[in-house]
Image 1: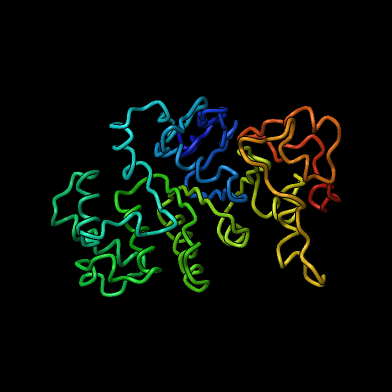
Image 2 (image 1 turned 120 degrees about the horizontal axis):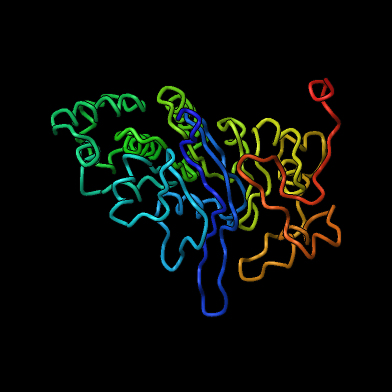
Amino acid sequence: MTDIPVLSVRNLVVEIPTRHAVLRPVDQVSFDIARGEILGVVGESGAGKSMTGSAVIGLLDRPARIASGEVYLNGQRIDNLSQAQMRKIRGRGIGMVFQDPLTSLNPLLTVGEQLIETMCEHLDISKADARTRAIRALEEVGIPAADHRIDSYPHAFSGGMRQRVVIALALCAQPALIIADEPTTALDVSVQAQIISLLKRLCRERGTAVMLVTHDMGVIAETADRVAVMYAGRTAELGPVREVLSRPRHPYTEGLMASTPQASLGQHRLRQIPGNMPRLGALPDGCAFHPRCTKGQDVCQRNPGPTLAADAGRSACWFPVTHPKTVEEEV
């Protein structure tokens, strides 16, 4: 039982029917997240990162729907559950941290009332015990004077402190999985570092699995154990974060890394990927990246890249980037 991933996503397809076509913002996505592991999901805006997280937790906005594929939480399939059943999963099985904490917090309730309500809903405890645990949860995420601040309303907290409250809210029912959707984007750099450090510590101490959705490669490098790179709804590359960032195999990942300031040290201009990611309603035939790819060949214009399985490596590309072998690989 210990080998069962906390989250297992298999061939997930999300469709949005429109008047003119059926769009696929998520197309054949597969990955696993183990206990205590942080999987970073990275890509440009519109790549399908947030839509994947919303599909996992059952919060797709209509008319978007899961068209095919399977989602398992601790071995139990959850993508076919009713909304009532998913409400029981949210909070207890899966916690959510959104980019803007004000969308997660009720401005008319104190943070303590929201924490207590969540714990009483999912845990068999009294309100008095829930309040004690709520104070402890606020202390754990670094809220000073938590026994007094617990009775404050969300507007009384700074942006960074509100995000800490949201993390406490996501963790208070002791879920197995946290989905963090751009949790540091709206924060100052120093506060971003604190939130990243907090997520890493709580993940290690509690053994919580984390799906970290972001467009920031720096956050991925600092936080994640493995990374899934998404492009136009598909997984372009999946693997250990150090390997993917230092030895990318998909041309898109290589372009992302080459366009970061650190990778461009000593150059007068940052390198960039030509063109833009295609709109969902205007995807090219074959591999969606081929119009921007410098390594594309005829087959790339006819056939999509190979589907990347959760347990297979690394790059969904017909012609992956090659690198010189390391000493470890030669041995």
